[in-house]
Structure formats: structure tokens, C-alpha cells
Image (tube, rainbow, N blue to C red; front, side, top):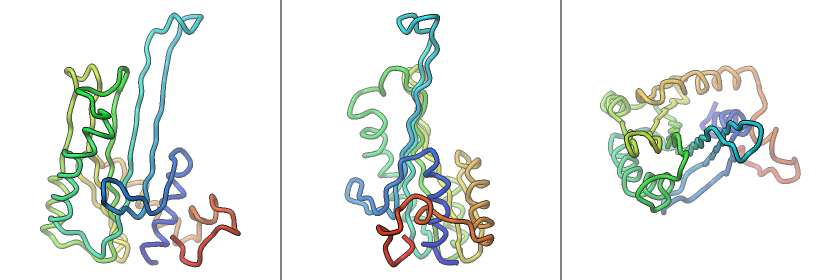
Length: 197
């Protein structure tokens, strides 16, 4: 299996609840794909004017497909989180996120052709960003990281991204069983390109 085929399977899983875009440039960096999720939960008493509570949750998933993972790439992504993603995608240029903001996940999915070196895997475990707003009254933003080695069929995450392991491991099993991917399930046949992604 190659990286494009694996990404095709992974994107199909995300497309069930995320908006998915292929080949997306964000702040000057080209991502292989980008997925966006937002959710609004509200509780009322009889009428909408009597709102008890409201929560908003978001996730941005940025897909990269380098040949291999390097600590320098992770340093660069963390700088991107601090200088652009958190201030722009989470706070929208304001001092705090919007009212009722509960969380925003900034998730990086790095799909490699080669098994990362030990120093790169050590950097994965150290990849951390968690920022609360107004003592968490305006929620928090957190960076999550998942790294998949397509050739070795291994998955690693930072501590915040641990729950992602199951999805990415299952994508390997689904690919082996011939499951349909994003292209087959969500793109009309006449619009598909020659390459899988």
C-alpha cells in the first residue's frame, strides 16, 4: 500500500462528520488534505430564549505526506501552531475565543513512507500545546499529533492524540480488506482523477 491509498481510506473515515478538502494551502504551507469539524450543543427550557447552556467544539486536521518524519518538521509545525493557527483559527484574531467555546483541536496527521528515526519519535512524544482561556471558562486549544508509517503499518501519537491511534490502525486493516476510500465514496466517478489522491 502507498501513502495516497492509505490517505484515501483515512479521509473516508473523516468525511462522515468533517468537511474534507484535498490539496489545501494554509498560511503558505501546502497540506495534502485538510478536514474541518464544528459542533454546537445547546440546552433550553421550553423555549430558545430560556437557554441553560451552549457549547461549541471545533477540530482542524492537517494532513502531510512527507517521505519521513524529522524533528525539524515538528518544530516547524509547533511554530505554526503558536504563530498562526491558535491566534487565527482558534481566537480569530481576538484576545479570547468566542463565547461558549469549549475546545478546538489542531490535529496534524503525518503519513510517512518510511519509519521515522528514534529521535523523530521522541519528538512526537514531546509535541505539546494546550492553552486555556479565562481559566478555561472560554475553553481551551490543544495540538494533537498522529504519525502513521505506511510501509511498516505503525502508528504513533503525542499524549493528546492517543485516542487517534484506533482510527489510524483500523485504516490499515480496512485497506487490507479492500474497503472503499474517500474517492470512491464521496467523489462522483466522472470527477475522479487518475491518481488516488
